[in-house]
Image (cartoon, rainbow, N blue to C red; front, side, top):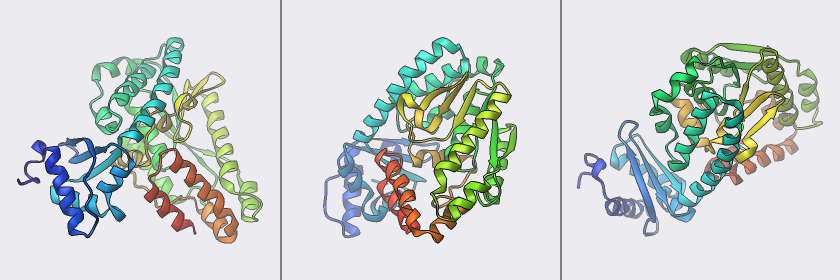
Length: 348
């Protein structure tokens, strides 16, 4: 069977045999792959394999990703993505919690854009591994009303993949977003992040504004080793974005937070609804990277803040707090263990 030419008609047993063959060729132990289901997207040339649990996922991925890498080559496709059904169920539960909260809000706000978000969430609960496909095939009829609404929303855009994905989704669902970037200077917002926010804003045809904020005290004290900069820096940046949103009477404000899942992803800040969009949709880091990359946003390795790198260099004890952040994202299922290990190794 020529799998490269006939992948649309591939059977589960053939896929299992190919994985067993690849494992044998690279010297891995013979293990029967536990494939729960799989789906091939012909347009994106991506194969999504769902295993029953994490051990089955490890079998398909292989040590160092060798098996899944060879599988992609053998099939002649762009990418192979592997998920554990048990992980998908956790994400589904989180999205159901967010959906219950969103329906309560929808009754009060009467917003077509919120209705669009609720529909996307419902669709994603049914197909939790197909975010990009769901966005690309979102019904046009659902968007007509929201495009005519007088909606003002603000997206905090840092230049990273999480906030970039928030802007992309908010734009696609009809929230009429403005992108704002807090600029405390190049030690926190380097030039490559500025290029990223400007390029993405232009591609999406959204207004973009820089907001000045003096963080000299945070910079000085963190460089002196008094504290890890991320907590204080994030707090002040969020306050700056919220003040701007209040000044322009925005109804919605979006952040790229991945950890405040479930009902915690929807919080009112006064009269403004704060939506932590990647968390609400229970996205993984891989998903936000794929969506951002589709719109020309590239992921920088590790955490891209020059201040954080300098603090960790001058004060090695501060590295533990960065590692704890990676651990939180790993426990939440946002990061894969292999990704987390790579990030920790870069830190230490």
